[in-house]
Amino acid sequence: MTLTGTNSYLLNCGAGEALVIDPGPALERHVRALLDAAARMQLAIRAIAITHGHPDHAPAAAALSRETGAAIYAHPQSAVPHDRDLSLGGSLRVGELELHAIDAPGHTFDHVVFFDPKSLTLFTGDVILGEGTVVIAPPGGAMRPYQRTLEHLARKFPQARAIRGGHGPLVTDAQAKIAEYIAHRQWREAQLLDALSHGPQTIPELVTRIYAGTQPALWPAAARQLLAHLQALTQEGRVVAMPIERPLTARESAMLNPDWASLVEAELAAVIEAELGSAYRIERLDRYALLPREDDLAEL
Image 1 (cartoon, rainbow, N blue to C red):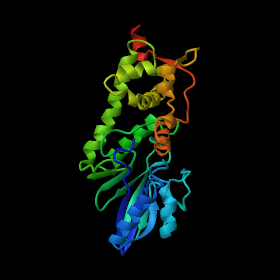
Image 2 (spheres, helix red, strand yellow):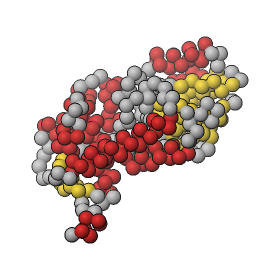
Image 3 (tube, rainbow, N blue to C red):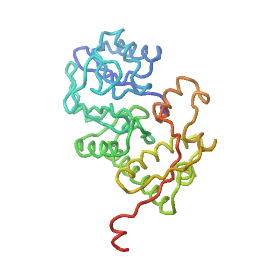
Image 4 (cartoon, one colour):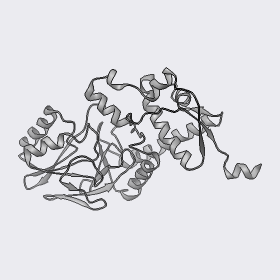
């Protein structure tokens, strides 16, 4: 879920001051690495900015703030304890550095993306990663807001050159990566609609059909992705959910509601559960079917 780990960024703000974006998990070694890096650069950490509240991005803010006295900035809707709300659509200024703060819902509803106009760099947290794609899992995330966020970044920042995501390597062609992410979501939805064109199906049935080439260990994540797409399509009147009046089978439950605490260590389980919205259990199995569109009805 975190590739090689969480990327925390230490930005030189001039005049001996620094800003940290996403201080990371509450691990002493992670906090110490940030403090040591600042000391080597002879910088004092004056501010901490959080892209979103997931446990691999935000919890170290408290410890880092205690060590440095730095103020913590977060989205106005963030449940993470913070000193100041970010001005969405406005800027965050620390020393000589001024970043634009952009409301970026979808992965979560407390997500912020930062843009540095000097380096033409987007700091995207978990909206865009250095490699792979992003989990969009209800109820903490939603597909259409996420897609609108991607389109907003493409329109508003055509000058952006680089992306520094919350995980993975530096992206050196920002526009190509944003376009890739937009196309990926469209492609997945097209796959889903094509699968439903063969008849009504449950999410486990859709997962085994659409993600047949993906290792089964990732199917619970795929199930949550499809749920996000299906919720959007249902709200738009393109798909209908029909309840199945029977309990979930063991196989269905393992895919839809995996017990991560019994499968991985507690720290990793907390990250996975936050990413996949696992606290939201799917207790009722629905069968999803395409609804005829107006053009189809006209032909009838």
